[in-house]
Length: 437
Figure 1 (tube, rainbow, N blue to C red):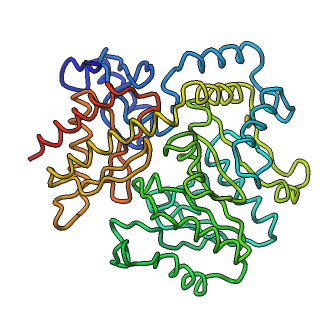
Figure 2: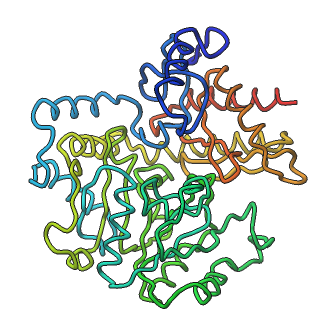
Figure 3: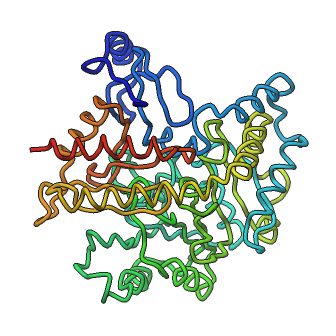
């Protein structure tokens, strides 16, 4: 057995740190299972009480090459002893990372603007699109999540991101995303002909001032519950942008670096976005992000108009280069497909025997398990979801929840997960689901 949980959670040292956290840290962060991490290696996490768990979160889809991969750690250690920051001055690693990222892009993308966080990347994309077009309206989607800074929050279509924060940035037009399990139009995928895409024209006609600059979308909606659009949707959306002279921004902060079984999600349908936002997996734990762009768009900016204090810093660039090397050497994309296919089949088998597992969806090593009160009504059940989270944790499996209704468990382990680890994790989940009343 890889996992080992000594007794009821939280353990004594975890209780101590959790009590201290209650005093000195705000409660504004997402609350998950009551454990305090101490260390991690690959897909295995150890808490401060000595319990070990398998990780189905990757630290919120960050550690794609696994926790503390030796080659990743070594490259960062070497970098930190050499140089930590130099602001706008180029370094050999920064230029090399930019070149390697560009080489992985569609042929229309020829520049990389290195940043620190996904929010920075989406905000930069929005600003650049407005600057390039001279227009100001942004089309975004119900359920979308693009970060927690003001502009990113304004583009979000997820209420929890912006609720009670007052007026948001003007000029954002929201339209439905194809959430087929809960279609707002009560249609079925087999005969809807992507009605939500046609409905977007109605939304634009009613809300736009005729000043459209850009459209931003995630290849799958992470924060809304790992919602994947039907095949062909993104292609038709890209064509719509081209027909309407709108900058097409693809937010791949979550979906990039092997997560969906391809290096980037734009590969699903051979998309050619004008701007691509990268983050999370690019640094695999080190704060790193990038806006991948067309030089003709970036040429609209004057020198000094955009920068980032720690964007493209030597540590982040060293981490990014190590990540790319590890992907090539260990073929993590292939492993994401292999392990993902196994887990998906196991989850579908569980769904067939569960009254509470309403939907299983995903690609590669990113899946959403949507829990309901019963499968006849498909009423969302955040209560059952939290019960599954706690029972899994007590059995040695760390899972987190997302979703518009808080009823989706994320399945997103590091891409280095082995067959034995996947089997043990699936066995834990199956046992938990069978234990539900």
